Image (cartoon, rainbow, N blue to C red; front, side, top):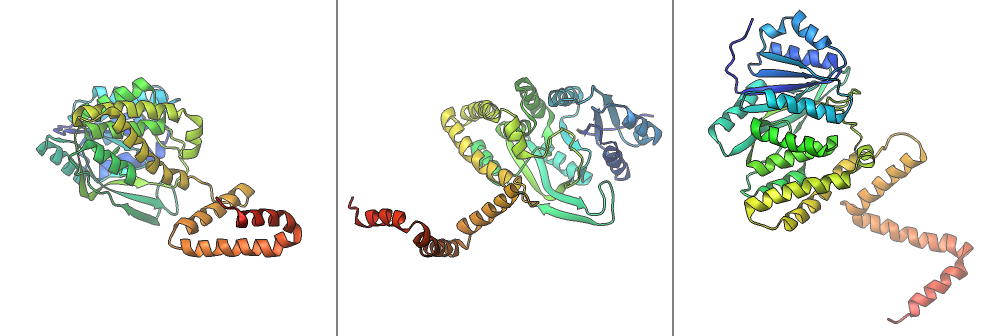
Length: 360
């Protein structure tokens, strides 16, 4: 039985061995009358999900196109799977879906409507709500939600919008995109064989260079966090680990070369100046990621040292910086009078006398 469908949006459901999550996602779409086309990109080691769809007759209510590809044993294979999906869909708009996340389909339709009415927009999304199941992974009675407010990219300058994106980490990856722009981004990404984290960064930056961005005030995307299962694109969720394993310095230069040339052409400025701005703001972008990935749990000496350093820098550069300065001076005096006088008074006295009498 075929469903009569006039949808202008395809949801690409990325699937890689998280069977329970994928079944939950499809059940949610079924229960909430999802009217969009659904392209199931199955990169798992088996066809269990295909059997589930057929057995539960989900395809009778949802407009599903199921495509089995080779196993996502590497990120390059995953990218080819996604590019194959983007080349085959026929709707003018597309959105990616991880199998552990949810969309508000009514609000997603509003994003499609905005793209339909304003041709200068290249992507449209809403707000994000993060949720954690406290008493389970797939389901539970205790669910905690955190809303992550996004701001707006209203600047006429694409470069200024990118700088805002890098400063405030307001991602657009899970927005509704114009299919042609999103596909072109993935074609370039696959050509350069970028690593997982760099791929997402490049895709978002590329979309920024294509036109205007719309952020709507209501929640469109519900993102689950803090469960032990690896995500559908096989990211490690260990930012520092990724920094060490991949040639990020090469990749980021390749990305910024592409983006700076595109921006320079449209905004009539030198690519070198754009690239310098991008590098400066990317350092701002990296700081929270690095800090959040410092392991502060446990009792090992390196973890204890990390905790001390975090507390120290929090005091040193935060609202209590004058209190920190007072403690530092007090520590210096105590160290001098209680320890140096007993152990190395003569050695320190030589330095002290010299500095007190030295004239520059």
